[in-house]
Image (cartoon, rainbow, N blue to C red; front, side, top):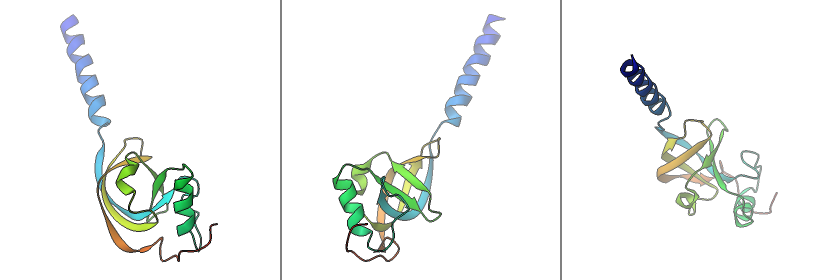
Length: 118
């Protein structure tokens, strides 16, 4: 009986770990900051760079305006305010990503111009 209970417990642990495994997905969007997220309007490029310099973390805003925390922010240090396509592991919570590869797709924040801060 103890052996059966041990096998069932091990099976439950394995199933739980498998359910918590990160899913790899391709996402598109732009790199923003954790202060403003998807709320940038015209001239938001300067704001993104300033907020990150002031200590806010870079985030990805996807095509659906969902804001993703970036677990490895050094991966986007050359992409602040750029439109990007990336391959990332999505955290099981669905709130953060770990970027494997990233490429620019052209344009800045959906076509915004650089300029004054928000």
